[in-house]
Image (cartoon, rainbow, N blue to C red; front, side, top):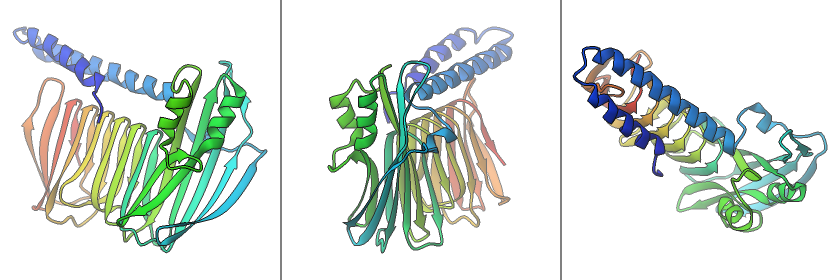
Length: 327
């Protein structure tokens, strides 16, 4: 994870709080500081996301005029059928030309058991199904003040799906190469400036036979549904949500600035997991299972605790600025 400016800000404010430690209205001051920090950092999170990507359903919409290409590619021991479409672009009120595209991939005969998916800017959703194949959907969006540049950026974006040592790796690359697309953009354009940016949302549906999940984003939300196995999920700026997670021993879910909300599958097995955010709230739904909560610390603006589920599974939850809730 990268250096978190939000955490530095919190450190400064916490120092200020200590100066008031002798005041009679300490609790009232602490509550005010906590609310102010959470509000400020939420604004930071929102502004960062808006500066690098537009969030919402419109990212997944494609224009009426579509160019289409289809190809068959052999990847590892599976067969990948890829279909790409590009929508018609338009000018926005800020004088930037915005164009969207998407790519769908179906990978059959996939012998991988582990998943590794990552993006720089964009949301990631991972879920399992009873199907034997892997389905990947990527929605791209590029904006630039020059129409030709925006079209170049969207035309050159592609999804790479390769199997290496039993791991299915998914990332955004420069079309026709294995070069990371964000690195390519930084080399060729004024990337992530007021005149040019690009983001990608990736949805992956995999068979239930997968056992390990590495999911990472720099700026973006992560959503996980019905996963059983080892999970290592992290984002610098963004929220993380998980439903019906059967987390294997040693699993980790972290965000620098954002909320974490998960629900556990049942019954849990023996093991432990870590959940953490520097700035944000944590909510853990134990799915009606017996649990015991022990607080290890309750700072002025943060909270740390351990919840033991069904007597044999421990989750350590920690936030520097925010609350932890177990239900």
